[in-house]
Image 1 (cartoon, rainbow, N blue to C red):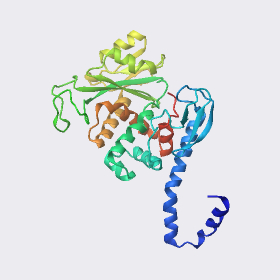
Image 2 (image 1 turned 90 degrees about the vertical axis):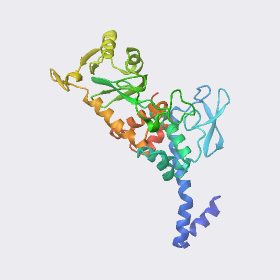
Image 3 (image 1 turned 45 degrees about the vertical axis):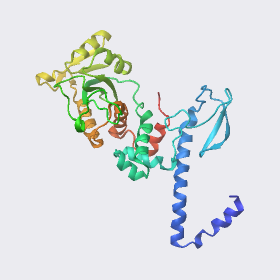
Image 4 (image 1 turned 120 degrees about the vertical axis):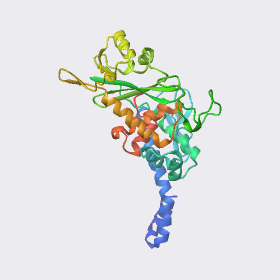
Amino acid sequence: MKAPPFKRWFARLPSLNGAQRRQVLDALHPAAGLDQVVALIAQARAPGRCCPSCGNARCNRHGFANDLQRFRCCNCGRTFNDLSGTPLARLRLKTKWLAYSQVLLDSLPVRKAADRVGVHRNTAFRWRHRFLAWVKLDRPAALNGIVEADETFLLESQKGSRALDRPPRRRGGRAARRGISRELDCILVARDRNGGTIDAVTGRGALTVAQLERGLLPRLDPQALLVSDSHAAYRAFARKHRIAHEVVNLCAGVRVRRLGNLAIHVQNVNGYHQRFKAWLMCFRGVASRYLPNYLGWRWALDGGRVSSPEQLLRIAVGTINR
């Protein structure tokens, strides 16, 4: 609308009655939400905007499509927008994205999330893992000081799979064999005393040195003091890479021991295990292939590290150090 007609329309707003004003506000509310989402996307991507095809940072504006500014790369000539190459590319209903980000902060199951936002339950499930694809990567660069490491186990699940590689279990069921077996997913968690946390789904069965080298070594400061239980894999890993290592023998009933002025224990990481498993119960079982996303989701919520829908949306479109 051009300026003169808009001014005439705007001047007549005070003459509207209450019902008409509510109708105008209801019509403007989705547009205001869309404008806010588009502004957040542009702010998040502007500092490191580059062509997703060739990585060139030089680009020109090239019109609008689907409510987003498009750009043309000066090097390869390809066009793109601020969502190209991100997990949220080609997702629709942008007006509902902030509401869905709040749903993730509230840890709602799929059906309740769909009812609150007003989308189909399949859409709510698909959005969950699109939004979490980069949220799970927002982790500390390294763990420093005293680093506690321990593993926990969850029963392997093929929930949602069209074909199983084993006989089905009724309502989740339980492992056929006692103790640690190939029926359990191993989750390695390491935390320093500042709350920095890294985790990895290492595979099925008992933890190995090779899995520690893949999941822990790249993020462990060489000067850190590694504290673990008496599992032989930690001992061999620390010896192989010359990492300072202290053991707490939980099997002997030792929970805390003193090393000078330092308290040696793994209660910090075990508490994190307990909070993660208690939080996971509200989803009534999750598929093993999605466990990394849920670990990243829990890390974002733990200690209020992501506290607003706007912050979560900015991370989801890629403003993290990857």
